[in-house]
Length: 167
Image (cartoon, rainbow, N blue to C red):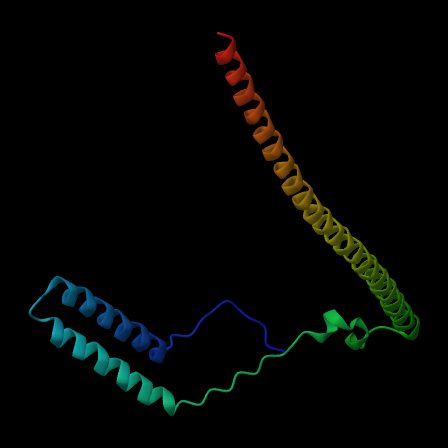
């Protein structure tokens, strides 16, 4: 496994990528400002980028990333004896059982959630039915109030006629 020593290597291709991109961005700023030389700078930046892309098309880099499996499976270290490996296996089995218990608990919680959601859906449907009944009752009540108003108006008219006759 490779150890990272902290020293980096200068990557010319990466340098030209960055330089070409910077030149293109500067040219864009000049273009926004309306500079006379913006076209030349822009073409220069695009040309540098095109050359970098052409060169990078032929660059073959093999990067071998090694995963640190010993962190996941400590028994792969090889310097442990049978007893330690057996203990590690027992711990792994215990973790698996705990995960299975957790999954079982999650399944029960999901079932409870589904049941509660169905109950809530039924309650909402009942509320909708009650709302419809309330709307019908309020319309009937409004009709009765209108009739009462009409009767009160007629009584008021009759009383007014009687008062006018009496005077």
